[in-house]
Length: 121
Image 1 (cartoon, rainbow, N blue to C red):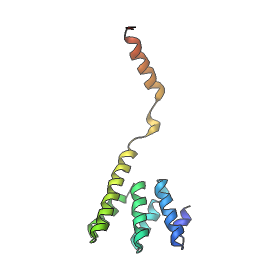
Image 2 (spheres, helix red, strand yellow):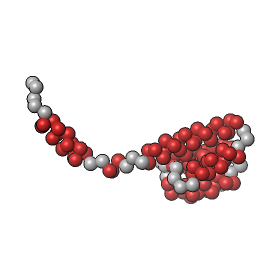
Image 3 (cartoon, helix red, strand yellow):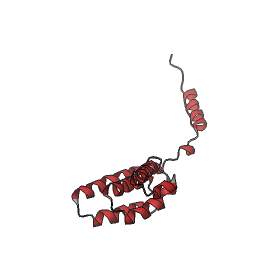
Image 4 (spheres, helix red, strand yellow):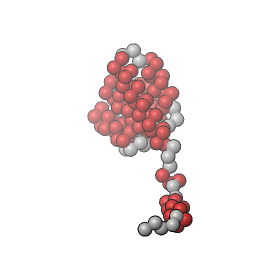
């Protein structure tokens, strides 16, 4: 799929960029950041910004802030600000690691708490 991020056909490239964002494909981050540097097509540029906001990670926030600071069009600035809101959510979610939860331990602790309480039935 990463090879499609360089496809000459803009429709294929756009779909690949969108898919990378939907999948939060970290391996696409550097390719997308590099593509953003040279992209002149507004729709592809927006797709790149959105995908990066979903992927997050090293360099994304700084790059979006640079783009926002240089943006003169109010509508585009609003779009970038929305992408930065998405990025904030992405970064917040990255702090939660579902594999850190140990349901057995939590279940046992909950069971112990129930055993300490007398039955009122």
